[in-house]
Length: 117
Image 1: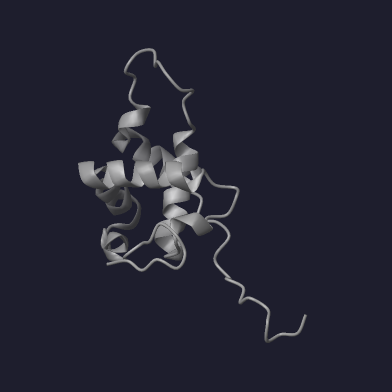
Image 2: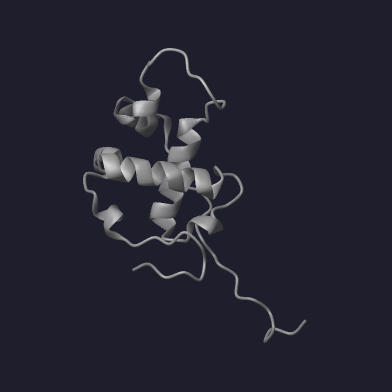
């Protein structure tokens, strides 16, 4: 295969995982981490895994569907992102971590090839 027919490679950062110190600072902000008694329904997902997934997308400014496999399924991460954004939890998280919520002003798309409005 010659170089003219090869797809361009995306060189995105591989990780934006929270440190233990960062994680402990945001745990009180997450409604999912509050003791609400026994849960019913689907097995619980590791919320830290989801937060790391959302942080990757916010930092990389990449479509959700391009998240590396080491993160939560992009549909799950996107669902939590929308829920936290609507409730104000996401703004609280990024402000606690970075002292600003400017990272939330960047448009994010769900799939590659789809442009944000």
